[in-house]
Length: 391
Image (spheres, rainbow, N blue to C red):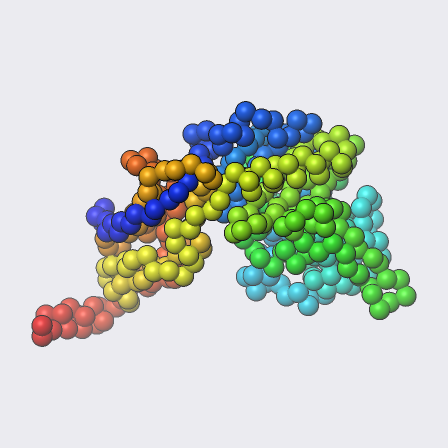
Protein backbone atom coordinates (compact mmCIF):
# COMPACT_ATOMS: atom_id res chain seq x y z
CA UNK A 1 0.00 0.00 0.00
CA UNK A 2 1.49 3.29 -1.07
CA UNK A 3 1.63 6.29 1.21
CA UNK A 4 0.83 8.79 -1.52
CA UNK A 5 -2.64 10.31 -1.37
CA UNK A 6 -5.02 12.12 -3.65
CA UNK A 7 -6.60 15.14 -1.98
CA UNK A 8 -9.82 16.82 -3.08
CA UNK A 9 -10.50 20.11 -1.29
CA UNK A 10 -13.65 22.15 -0.97
CA UNK A 11 -14.77 25.17 0.97
CA UNK A 12 -18.27 25.44 2.39
CA UNK A 13 -19.68 28.76 3.56
CA UNK A 14 -21.07 28.46 7.09
CA UNK A 15 -23.09 30.96 9.05
CA UNK A 16 -22.61 29.30 12.41
CA UNK A 17 -19.72 28.07 14.50
CA UNK A 18 -18.91 24.41 14.92
CA UNK A 19 -20.18 22.59 17.95
CA UNK A 20 -17.12 21.47 19.86
CA UNK A 21 -16.66 17.72 19.78
CA UNK A 22 -15.97 15.69 22.88
CA UNK A 23 -12.29 14.98 23.11
CA UNK A 24 -11.80 18.73 23.30
CA UNK A 25 -14.75 20.17 25.24
CA UNK A 26 -18.45 19.48 25.62
CA UNK A 27 -20.87 21.92 24.01
CA UNK A 28 -20.30 25.51 25.15
CA UNK A 29 -23.38 27.02 26.78
CA UNK A 30 -24.59 23.63 28.00
CA UNK A 31 -21.55 23.41 30.23
CA UNK A 32 -22.82 26.30 32.34
CA UNK A 33 -26.16 24.67 33.02
CA UNK A 34 -26.99 21.28 34.47
CA UNK A 35 -29.58 20.00 32.02
CA UNK A 36 -30.33 16.91 34.12
CA UNK A 37 -29.92 17.94 37.77
CA UNK A 38 -31.85 14.99 39.21
CA UNK A 39 -30.21 12.29 37.09
CA UNK A 40 -27.39 10.24 38.51
CA UNK A 41 -25.82 10.16 35.04
CA UNK A 42 -26.73 11.75 31.71
CA UNK A 43 -25.57 12.60 28.21
CA UNK A 44 -26.88 14.57 25.23
CA UNK A 45 -25.52 13.67 21.80
CA UNK A 46 -26.08 14.58 18.17
CA UNK A 47 -26.85 11.22 16.55
CA UNK A 48 -25.57 12.24 13.14
CA UNK A 49 -22.02 13.16 14.13
CA UNK A 50 -21.69 11.67 17.60
CA UNK A 51 -20.92 15.15 18.99
CA UNK A 52 -21.50 15.32 22.74
CA UNK A 53 -23.31 18.50 23.76
CA UNK A 54 -23.69 17.78 27.47
CA UNK A 55 -22.68 15.04 29.86
CA UNK A 56 -22.78 14.34 33.56
CA UNK A 57 -21.01 11.35 35.14
CA UNK A 58 -21.36 9.79 31.70
CA UNK A 59 -18.81 7.00 32.30
CA UNK A 60 -20.25 5.84 35.65
CA UNK A 61 -21.01 2.12 35.54
CA UNK A 62 -24.65 1.76 36.56
CA UNK A 63 -27.46 -0.79 36.22
CA UNK A 64 -29.21 0.01 32.90
CA UNK A 65 -32.45 -1.90 33.59
CA UNK A 66 -34.51 -2.41 30.41
CA UNK A 67 -32.36 -0.03 28.37
CA UNK A 68 -30.37 -3.25 27.96
CA UNK A 69 -32.94 -4.18 25.31
CA UNK A 70 -31.42 -1.62 22.92
CA UNK A 71 -28.60 -4.10 22.34
CA UNK A 72 -31.11 -6.95 22.00
CA UNK A 73 -32.96 -4.93 19.35
CA UNK A 74 -29.70 -3.97 17.64
CA UNK A 75 -28.62 -7.59 17.18
CA UNK A 76 -32.11 -8.42 15.92
CA UNK A 77 -32.26 -5.69 13.27
CA UNK A 78 -28.69 -6.46 12.20
CA UNK A 79 -29.77 -10.05 11.61
CA UNK A 80 -32.76 -8.79 9.61
CA UNK A 81 -30.60 -6.50 7.49
CA UNK A 82 -28.06 -9.27 6.90
CA UNK A 83 -30.76 -11.67 5.73
CA UNK A 84 -30.22 -14.11 8.61
CA UNK A 85 -33.74 -13.40 9.84
CA UNK A 86 -37.07 -12.36 8.34
CA UNK A 87 -39.88 -10.39 9.98
CA UNK A 88 -42.25 -13.24 9.14
CA UNK A 89 -40.11 -15.92 10.81
CA UNK A 90 -41.81 -17.65 13.72
CA UNK A 91 -40.27 -17.45 17.18
CA UNK A 92 -41.22 -20.17 19.65
CA UNK A 93 -41.47 -19.39 23.37
CA UNK A 94 -39.53 -21.75 25.63
CA UNK A 95 -40.51 -22.54 29.20
CA UNK A 96 -37.57 -20.43 30.33
CA UNK A 97 -38.60 -17.40 28.23
CA UNK A 98 -42.18 -17.64 29.50
CA UNK A 99 -40.96 -17.68 33.11
CA UNK A 100 -39.52 -14.14 33.00
CA UNK A 101 -41.03 -11.75 35.53
CA UNK A 102 -41.31 -7.97 35.43
CA UNK A 103 -42.64 -6.28 32.31
CA UNK A 104 -43.85 -8.86 29.81
CA UNK A 105 -46.30 -9.66 27.04
CA UNK A 106 -47.38 -12.84 28.86
CA UNK A 107 -46.06 -15.36 26.39
CA UNK A 108 -47.07 -18.94 27.14
CA UNK A 109 -44.72 -21.93 26.77
CA UNK A 110 -44.87 -23.14 23.18
CA UNK A 111 -46.57 -19.97 21.91
CA UNK A 112 -45.29 -18.68 18.59
CA UNK A 113 -45.11 -15.11 17.35
CA UNK A 114 -43.39 -13.59 14.34
CA UNK A 115 -40.17 -11.59 14.64
CA UNK A 116 -42.26 -8.52 13.79
CA UNK A 117 -44.56 -9.18 16.76
CA UNK A 118 -41.67 -9.92 19.10
CA UNK A 119 -40.03 -6.62 18.17
CA UNK A 120 -43.26 -4.83 19.02
CA UNK A 121 -43.34 -6.58 22.37
CA UNK A 122 -39.73 -5.64 23.14
CA UNK A 123 -39.76 -2.04 21.89
CA UNK A 124 -43.17 -0.95 23.12
CA UNK A 125 -44.04 -3.14 26.13
CA UNK A 126 -40.46 -3.87 27.21
CA UNK A 127 -41.27 -7.56 27.27
CA UNK A 128 -38.67 -9.53 29.22
CA UNK A 129 -40.19 -12.76 27.92
CA UNK A 130 -40.10 -11.55 24.31
CA UNK A 131 -36.45 -10.53 24.70
CA UNK A 132 -35.42 -14.00 25.87
CA UNK A 133 -37.48 -15.70 23.15
CA UNK A 134 -35.79 -13.52 20.54
CA UNK A 135 -32.35 -14.21 22.04
CA UNK A 136 -32.96 -17.96 21.90
CA UNK A 137 -34.13 -17.68 18.29
CA UNK A 138 -30.95 -15.88 17.25
CA UNK A 139 -28.30 -17.69 19.30
CA UNK A 140 -29.88 -20.91 20.60
CA UNK A 141 -29.75 -19.83 24.23
CA UNK A 142 -29.80 -16.61 26.22
CA UNK A 143 -26.25 -17.18 27.47
CA UNK A 144 -24.95 -17.56 23.91
CA UNK A 145 -26.83 -14.42 22.92
CA UNK A 146 -25.32 -12.50 25.86
CA UNK A 147 -21.89 -13.46 24.52
CA UNK A 148 -22.88 -11.84 21.22
CA UNK A 149 -24.10 -8.75 23.08
CA UNK A 150 -20.78 -8.33 24.85
CA UNK A 151 -18.85 -8.94 21.65
CA UNK A 152 -20.89 -6.25 19.84
CA UNK A 153 -20.39 -3.86 22.75
CA UNK A 154 -16.65 -4.35 22.46
CA UNK A 155 -16.77 -3.71 18.70
CA UNK A 156 -18.61 -0.43 19.35
CA UNK A 157 -16.00 0.67 21.88
CA UNK A 158 -18.37 0.41 24.86
CA UNK A 159 -15.75 0.17 27.58
CA UNK A 160 -18.09 0.80 30.53
CA UNK A 161 -20.46 -2.07 29.73
CA UNK A 162 -20.91 -5.73 30.58
CA UNK A 163 -24.13 -7.62 29.94
CA UNK A 164 -25.28 -10.60 32.01
CA UNK A 165 -28.71 -11.01 30.37
CA UNK A 166 -30.70 -9.74 27.39
CA UNK A 167 -33.51 -7.90 29.18
CA UNK A 168 -32.00 -5.89 32.05
CA UNK A 169 -33.48 -7.76 34.98
CA UNK A 170 -31.24 -7.30 38.05
CA UNK A 171 -28.14 -9.47 37.79
CA UNK A 172 -24.61 -9.48 39.10
CA UNK A 173 -21.99 -7.96 36.79
CA UNK A 174 -24.62 -6.32 34.58
CA UNK A 175 -23.87 -2.64 34.00
CA UNK A 176 -23.45 0.13 31.45
CA UNK A 177 -22.96 3.90 31.31
CA UNK A 178 -24.83 6.84 29.82
CA UNK A 179 -22.04 7.28 27.27
CA UNK A 180 -22.12 3.63 26.17
CA UNK A 181 -25.90 3.63 25.99
CA UNK A 182 -25.78 6.69 23.72
CA UNK A 183 -23.25 4.89 21.50
CA UNK A 184 -25.39 1.77 21.07
CA UNK A 185 -28.53 3.92 20.66
CA UNK A 186 -26.85 5.82 17.84
CA UNK A 187 -25.88 2.51 16.23
CA UNK A 188 -29.45 1.20 16.49
CA UNK A 189 -30.76 4.37 14.84
CA UNK A 190 -28.69 3.59 11.73
CA UNK A 191 -31.32 0.89 11.08
CA UNK A 192 -34.31 3.00 10.11
CA UNK A 193 -36.78 0.12 10.43
CA UNK A 194 -36.54 0.29 14.24
CA UNK A 195 -38.46 3.59 14.39
CA UNK A 196 -41.59 1.74 13.25
CA UNK A 197 -41.52 -0.03 16.61
CA UNK A 198 -39.98 2.47 19.04
CA UNK A 199 -41.97 5.40 17.63
CA UNK A 200 -45.42 3.79 17.86
CA UNK A 201 -47.49 4.79 20.85
CA UNK A 202 -49.97 1.93 20.77
CA UNK A 203 -50.66 -1.32 18.93
CA UNK A 204 -52.00 -4.83 19.49
CA UNK A 205 -50.66 -8.35 19.76
CA UNK A 206 -52.92 -11.39 19.23
CA UNK A 207 -55.45 -8.89 17.84
CA UNK A 208 -57.72 -11.50 16.24
CA UNK A 209 -57.39 -14.05 19.03
CA UNK A 210 -59.45 -14.66 22.17
CA UNK A 211 -56.77 -12.88 24.20
CA UNK A 212 -55.83 -9.64 22.41
CA UNK A 213 -53.02 -7.75 24.12
CA UNK A 214 -53.02 -3.96 23.96
CA UNK A 215 -49.55 -2.47 23.70
CA UNK A 216 -48.91 1.04 25.02
CA UNK A 217 -45.41 2.42 24.66
CA UNK A 218 -43.64 2.79 27.99
CA UNK A 219 -41.91 5.88 26.53
CA UNK A 220 -44.60 8.57 26.76
CA UNK A 221 -42.41 11.12 24.98
CA UNK A 222 -43.31 9.53 21.63
CA UNK A 223 -46.81 10.91 22.16
CA UNK A 224 -46.14 14.12 24.05
CA UNK A 225 -42.88 15.50 22.61
CA UNK A 226 -42.88 16.66 18.98
CA UNK A 227 -40.34 14.67 17.00
CA UNK A 228 -39.73 11.97 19.62
CA UNK A 229 -39.78 8.44 18.19
CA UNK A 230 -37.82 6.21 20.56
CA UNK A 231 -35.99 4.50 22.08
CA UNK A 232 -36.23 2.63 25.41
CA UNK A 233 -37.26 3.14 29.02
CA UNK A 234 -35.99 1.24 32.04
CA UNK A 235 -36.78 0.80 35.72
CA UNK A 236 -35.72 -1.40 38.60
CA UNK A 237 -35.54 -0.49 42.28
CA UNK A 238 -31.76 -0.47 41.96
CA UNK A 239 -31.47 1.43 38.66
CA UNK A 240 -34.36 3.85 39.37
CA UNK A 241 -35.98 5.49 36.33
CA UNK A 242 -33.89 5.42 33.14
CA UNK A 243 -34.42 6.45 29.54
CA UNK A 244 -32.55 6.50 26.27
CA UNK A 245 -34.61 8.77 24.06
CA UNK A 246 -34.34 10.13 20.54
CA UNK A 247 -36.08 12.92 18.67
CA UNK A 248 -35.65 14.50 15.25
CA UNK A 249 -36.35 17.99 13.94
CA UNK A 250 -35.20 19.79 10.79
CA UNK A 251 -32.76 17.04 9.89
CA UNK A 252 -31.13 17.05 13.33
CA UNK A 253 -31.49 13.89 15.44
CA UNK A 254 -30.74 13.95 19.15
CA UNK A 255 -30.02 11.14 21.59
CA UNK A 256 -30.51 11.84 25.30
CA UNK A 257 -29.79 9.33 28.05
CA UNK A 258 -30.61 9.70 31.75
CA UNK A 259 -29.97 7.09 34.44
CA UNK A 260 -31.07 7.02 38.07
CA UNK A 261 -33.93 9.54 37.87
CA UNK A 262 -36.27 9.69 40.90
CA UNK A 263 -39.55 9.27 38.95
CA UNK A 264 -41.02 9.19 35.45
CA UNK A 265 -42.17 12.81 35.52
CA UNK A 266 -38.69 14.11 36.28
CA UNK A 267 -37.14 11.69 33.80
CA UNK A 268 -39.37 12.86 30.96
CA UNK A 269 -39.08 16.54 31.91
CA UNK A 270 -35.28 16.52 31.98
CA UNK A 271 -34.98 14.64 28.68
CA UNK A 272 -37.44 17.08 27.08
CA UNK A 273 -35.30 19.96 28.34
CA UNK A 274 -32.19 18.39 26.86
CA UNK A 275 -33.92 18.06 23.50
CA UNK A 276 -35.16 21.66 23.69
CA UNK A 277 -31.63 22.86 24.29
CA UNK A 278 -30.13 20.99 21.35
CA UNK A 279 -32.83 21.97 18.86
CA UNK A 280 -32.77 25.63 19.90
CA UNK A 281 -28.98 26.01 19.90
CA UNK A 282 -27.69 23.84 17.05
CA UNK A 283 -28.31 22.89 13.44
CA UNK A 284 -26.89 20.28 11.10
CA UNK A 285 -24.72 21.16 8.10
CA UNK A 286 -24.27 18.53 5.38
CA UNK A 287 -20.83 18.12 3.79
CA UNK A 288 -21.76 15.25 1.47
CA UNK A 289 -25.01 13.35 1.01
CA UNK A 290 -25.11 9.57 0.84
CA UNK A 291 -24.35 8.35 -2.67
CA UNK A 292 -22.31 11.36 -3.78
CA UNK A 293 -19.02 10.51 -5.49
CA UNK A 294 -16.00 11.60 -3.46
CA UNK A 295 -13.17 10.44 -5.70
CA UNK A 296 -11.58 7.39 -7.31
CA UNK A 297 -9.31 4.75 -5.79
CA UNK A 298 -6.56 3.44 -8.08
CA UNK A 299 -6.05 -0.30 -7.63
CA UNK A 300 -2.82 -2.08 -8.36
CA UNK A 301 -3.04 -5.61 -9.85
CA UNK A 302 -6.78 -5.87 -9.25
CA UNK A 303 -9.57 -7.25 -11.43
CA UNK A 304 -10.64 -3.60 -11.51
CA UNK A 305 -8.07 -0.89 -12.10
CA UNK A 306 -10.05 1.74 -10.23
CA UNK A 307 -13.04 2.04 -7.92
CA UNK A 308 -15.34 5.05 -7.47
CA UNK A 309 -15.62 6.02 -3.81
CA UNK A 310 -19.04 7.27 -2.75
CA UNK A 311 -20.40 8.60 0.53
CA UNK A 312 -21.82 5.63 2.44
CA UNK A 313 -23.97 7.93 4.58
CA UNK A 314 -24.69 11.62 5.01
CA UNK A 315 -21.46 13.25 6.20
CA UNK A 316 -22.50 16.10 8.46
CA UNK A 317 -21.22 18.45 11.12
CA UNK A 318 -23.06 20.13 13.97
CA UNK A 319 -23.13 23.92 13.86
CA UNK A 320 -23.97 26.40 16.60
CA UNK A 321 -26.79 28.74 15.65
CA UNK A 322 -26.43 32.50 15.57
CA UNK A 323 -22.64 32.88 15.49
CA UNK A 324 -21.01 34.32 12.37
CA UNK A 325 -18.01 32.23 11.38
CA UNK A 326 -15.56 31.98 8.51
CA UNK A 327 -16.24 29.37 5.83
CA UNK A 328 -15.46 25.78 6.67
CA UNK A 329 -13.50 23.52 4.35
CA UNK A 330 -13.13 19.80 3.86
CA UNK A 331 -10.66 17.52 2.15
CA UNK A 332 -11.23 14.08 0.70
CA UNK A 333 -8.01 12.14 1.12
CA UNK A 334 -7.87 8.87 -0.85
CA UNK A 335 -4.81 6.63 -0.99
CA UNK A 336 -3.07 7.04 -4.34
CA UNK A 337 -2.95 3.30 -4.99
CA UNK A 338 -3.79 0.15 -3.08
CA UNK A 339 -2.70 -3.28 -4.23
CA UNK A 340 -5.34 -5.99 -4.61
CA UNK A 341 -6.86 -7.92 -2.99
CA UNK A 342 -9.07 -5.35 -1.26
CA UNK A 343 -11.70 -6.30 1.28
CA UNK A 344 -15.09 -4.63 1.53
CA UNK A 345 -14.95 -2.21 4.46
CA UNK A 346 -11.18 -1.75 4.24
CA UNK A 347 -10.15 1.82 5.06
CA UNK A 348 -8.89 3.54 1.92
CA UNK A 349 -9.02 7.20 2.89
CA UNK A 350 -10.77 9.82 4.96
CA UNK A 351 -12.91 12.93 4.76
CA UNK A 352 -11.41 15.66 6.93
CA UNK A 353 -13.40 18.75 7.96
CA UNK A 354 -11.50 21.85 9.07
CA UNK A 355 -12.29 25.12 10.78
CA UNK A 356 -9.29 27.24 9.87
CA UNK A 357 -6.34 24.93 10.47
CA UNK A 358 -8.13 22.90 13.13
CA UNK A 359 -9.56 19.46 12.34
CA UNK A 360 -13.08 19.32 13.75
CA UNK A 361 -14.35 16.08 12.23
CA UNK A 362 -13.01 13.08 10.36
CA UNK A 363 -14.89 10.32 8.56
CA UNK A 364 -13.16 7.12 7.47
CA UNK A 365 -13.74 6.18 3.84
CA UNK A 366 -14.01 2.45 3.18
CA UNK A 367 -13.98 0.22 0.13
CA UNK A 368 -17.59 -0.49 -0.94
CA UNK A 369 -16.82 -3.97 -2.30
CA UNK A 370 -14.25 -6.76 -2.48
CA UNK A 371 -11.70 -6.45 -5.27
CA UNK A 372 -9.82 -9.66 -6.09
CA UNK A 373 -6.31 -9.86 -7.43
CA UNK A 374 -6.22 -10.15 -11.24
CA UNK A 375 -4.67 -13.13 -12.99
CA UNK A 376 -1.50 -12.77 -15.04
CA UNK A 377 -3.38 -12.86 -18.36
CA UNK A 378 -5.69 -10.00 -17.44
CA UNK A 379 -2.72 -7.97 -16.21
CA UNK A 380 -0.82 -8.74 -19.43
CA UNK A 381 -3.74 -7.59 -21.60
CA UNK A 382 -4.14 -4.45 -19.50
CA UNK A 383 -0.44 -3.63 -19.82
CA UNK A 384 -0.38 -4.38 -23.52
CA UNK A 385 -3.48 -2.30 -24.10
CA UNK A 386 -1.94 0.71 -22.37
CA UNK A 387 1.31 0.31 -24.36
CA UNK A 388 -0.44 0.38 -27.72
CA UNK A 389 -3.15 2.87 -26.83
CA UNK A 390 -3.46 5.60 -29.46
CA UNK A 391 -3.73 9.10 -28.00
